[in-house]
Amino acid sequence: MSLVDLIMPKLGESIMEATILKWHKNPGDKVAQDETILDIATDKVDSEVPSTAEGTIAEILFKVNDVVPIGAIIARINTGGTETMIASAPAVTTAPKEEYEEAKVVEHIPYQPAPNTFVPNGNTARFYSPLVLNIAQSEGISMTELEKIQGTGQDGRVSKKDMLHYVASRGGNQQVIANTQPMVNSQPQQVTVLPKEQPLRNEAQMPTVYQGNVEIIEMDRMRKLIAKHMVDSIHTSAHVTSFAECDVTSLVMWRERIKKDFEKREGEKITFTPLFIEAIVKCIKKYPWLSSSIDGDKIIIKKDLNIGMATALPNGNLIVPVIKNADQLNLVGLTKQVNGLANAARSGKLKPDDTNGGTFTLTNVGTFGSIMGTPIINQPQVAIMAVGAIKKRPMVIETPQGDTIGIRHMMYISLSYDHRIIDGGLGSTFLNAVSKELENFDPNRAI
Image 1 (cartoon, rainbow, N blue to C red):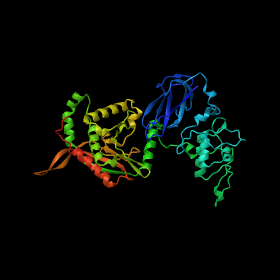
Image 2: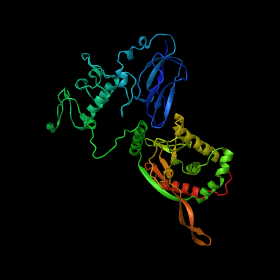
Image 3: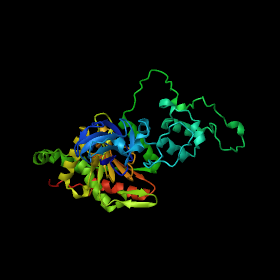
Image 4: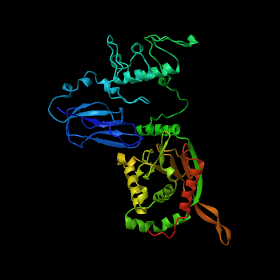
């Protein structure tokens, strides 16, 4: 019998985990190569995982809603013979099903597929999953101390949740449960020894009482991931936002004049987005640090200009499909890419590659009526630009005959950038360069 491991695929440089949404196959089912086995989801896109071999599903290692690290083995496929996996894989059959139910990704604890070197005492009858043993080893919890932790899992097993609650209480409240190591403390009265039968309580578990007339809505999976992504970005980058005002009258009048002919000739509606991306790309060519990322104390300049465009979904969430090599596309190519990715996003047909590899992001807050915004950087990028709503306003116009007042189409643009490598001078210079590109748009440009 030959077994092939099905690995959780890498879905982008910033994606470290994925959630299993649905299994299309069960153990014992036959599967063809490239046939879909399961659906997964990340904070960017839902995707299908195809089989890498033809054969029979021998084992499924994770269940629906499990969060699995990239590179983990999620299933095994028997590509020959009729033997069961139990005959050739005793290492995984010694543990009940709960071992895999607990093997979910834990924040800040690296996934280690190899057997853990933290071995229980020989005289203990309790079962501990590799994940629990890994947490105990990384947190310096002795085996004797581990045996004193009350488990809430099946048959009283210690689960990942039990370990996290114990570690949080152990570190935050200076509480211990029968720790065998001698403790030196100048204020011993602050140390509390909890009885073995007393379960550890976490304040986060206590129900919250809301006052007044309220409606409680549970975040959906995508909103939870977006929220985490945004908070992580704020904790990663030193955010600074600069603003500029630009007169886009020539651009607006040109688009109004050619849009019908453009649609008739190309079969595509031309929006302002490809025009904005075109201006951004020209300016990144002059200031390449705006298309970069940080790796420790190294600055990684991205030569491939892949521009992400924030797109609103029907459910109110946002997703950022990426236009690859935008600097190599003319206005027609940019328009087709923008429309194609936007339609795919709204219809749920984006592929994992459609959201990967972005080096700079554009978000149009003007679509929702805002005149300006302070967007959060899309990690691991170092800058994101927001364009506001275009408004007619009376403005002073300089002419050879003197100043005059006229009605102009005005727009605010803003740039949020990572102040660790982008100083105010560079950020403002780049922003003003984009503004000038838009203001100096050729109204006689041919399509």
